[in-house]
Image (cartoon, rainbow, N blue to C red):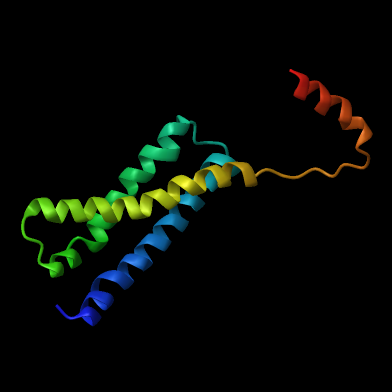
Length: 126
């Protein structure tokens, strides 16, 4: 199969779907969980399982028919390819969840450090 066809029919749509999926999930997670605090679900579900299922269904619905261009030998190879592409989307989502949780909170301005030195020292000794 011609490489330009693979590039146009599979790689570029995968790149678009992966970037948009990562942005969509992270935006929804930030808005519902951190900004509004209305999403009260276990952190393991939000950080691992929901992104994994979300990425699989995204690849299946948006790229499933395009993957048949590759002429996979059997149905197992087709689903293995779906899983590989799903993990390629899910791993950046996994990694970005920690960053979203840590970077989303407001910074406070400290006028003098002396007030907080005792608190910091007390917490480090515990």
